[in-house]
Image (tube, rainbow, N blue to C red; front, side, top):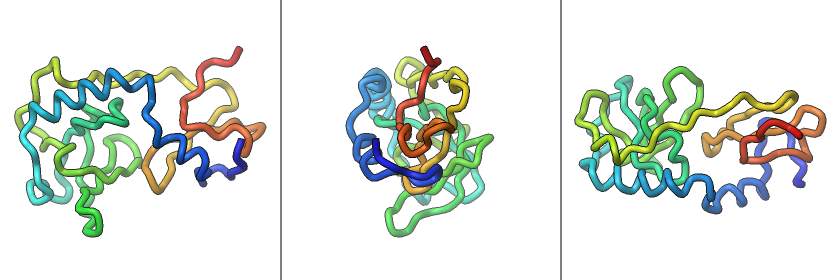
Length: 156
């Protein structure tokens, strides 16, 4: 395992997160279908402070269908900075991965259902990587040796 302090994702774990996740295969297929069904949006289609729905994500398909608030535009990347509703989690998304709230939605069969997560096992913690906006997990008894991008399940 790679040593890391809580709040700072290790480079080796970050590299592993870039690989496709087997558990997200179905979400990727549904996201691709949703993207094809929805009209492509541009950054100027969204106003700061307005609400949108995430759609068409492939790698993080569990976020599809989630409501978010438009916080601004990252001019360097052309991506919109959004905050997930009910959290302090920020993401930078392509305008094509957002649908203005109230806009026509893709067919229900094309949208991946949000995943429901069970509580973390005792002594495990979730932290959001500031660079990517993705959650990673670590165990209180050995933070440096247990950092993972995969949500832990109940311990044996």
